[in-house]
Length: 355
Image (tube, rainbow, N blue to C red; front, side, top):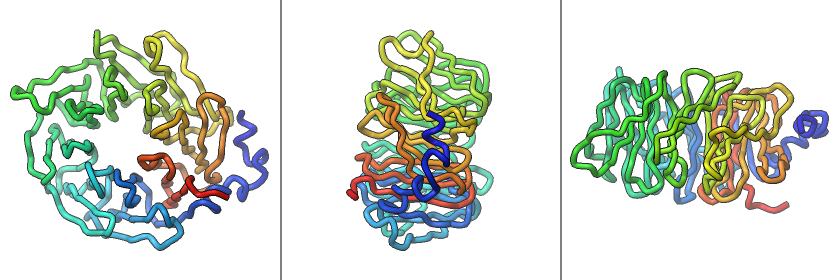
């Protein structure tokens, strides 16, 4: 499998860049691409950069000029789709911004210059969750604060479950689960020693998984709170993603895409499957297709590819050589893919086009 990914096996950089050059476009944006996202309505793609700028693109016309916004006084730390059209952007200037595809921008909240807005989640119901310091702030459609949920230490990541009824927050020594409509705000704490950072529910809501400060992930089965230890990685896991039906969880952090099985009882006691590896280059980003059992992956050398889980088939999207992949995202229908790198290169590919 490693030979199918090597530059020699693909023939040339031009071959590996075939999808990017024929069905998309790349732009040099000039600063670390921290985050990439598509609007839920399909109207726009956004890239957040370490210099505080946002770059907006039309996914249907990736080669057209992209709009540049001077968004944050400092670094942009994350960009996510808002509950409807547009995006939410957080920065180290303490601001939470709402950005529409036409470039109009509004400040939903200003937490002050000493607070980083690094962890944001939005649900189609209209709820937003914003992790700032030791608190998670729940906002409504208009941006008003519904409640503030206190945690014992700095929040490392936030996520809603599929129905928007619960929100999870990672922190030191565990993950806290909150019912967003509960009159008594008392969390269910999932304990595990160490610092918990990125966090996610499985699509069916039966499991919660977090990345650790160490080179590992940890998970809990919510029916009995059974622990799942996922370790042995050579590097810190900066990205993980569930397939659409939740059968697999793909992770970065190794020299391949690591896939943990979440069917037939879950991953406890089962070895993971590996895809697209063997050449010693670390996988830095993963994003599972929103409909099919396909995972997009970005690597330390800049390679971007798609892998079909069932067959193991690999399709290159972008060639190595543009810096480590630092952002990766699908649109809601899985017809468009966006990626960005640490050197400031960003790509947008429309896979619905033929030819």
